[in-house]
Amino acid sequence: MASSSILADVFHDALSEHLDIIRRLATEHEAFTRAATLLSRCLMRGNKILWCGNGGSAADAQHLAAELVGRFRRRRSPMASVALTTDTSVLTSIANDFGFEQVFERQVEALCHEGDALVGISTSGDSANVCAALHRARELDAFTIAMTGESGGHLAQCADVWLRVPSSDPARIQEGHILLGHMLCDCLDRDLCVEEQFEAAGMAL
Image 1 (cartoon, rainbow, N blue to C red):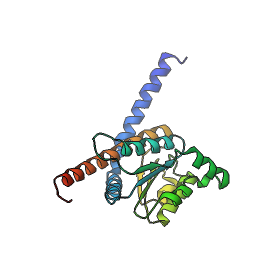
Image 2: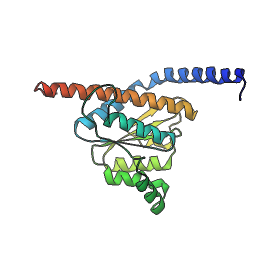
Image 3: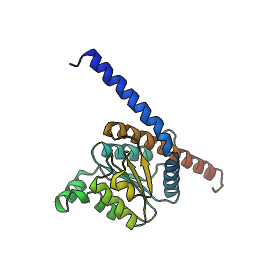
Image 4: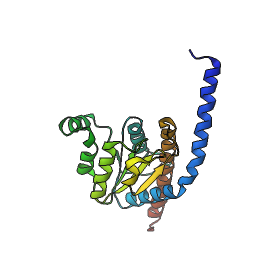
């Protein structure tokens, strides 16, 4: 087992790095506002949000989709939100028959329609299958959001909105992604609750 001094270094270094990166996310305010507005309009029109990513980013995609279909902070109607990372039969059949680079793109072709939104999550920004999915979504006139690390990679170039976590460390990037994702869920929660309150009062937004 590591010595107490090593454990203390790991603990305090991680906290320091995390807090520094989270504070630097303030530079993403404009991009965040655009992303939140885009996703809110998408749902209000009756469209849906799709999510994709690999590894830890796949887990983030599933996590954030679940927050919208279930609940985040408030009781409200479920939101149309689908993670393209969860159906093992679909994923393995596409990977086997077409190649792993198409596991998300082919699902986008099947499920994505004009006015929908696709959120691609990648710490490097260069995940080929996520990039392919965003390209296909744009061809289908869907909105696209990239969540990446500081470099952005190819994903930043093929998205309508780029949310950047200013770090090159995958662990710190993923921590930033889940914070950004939770903030997006909070905004969508608020918007839908307001809309439902207006509808209950017989008014239109």
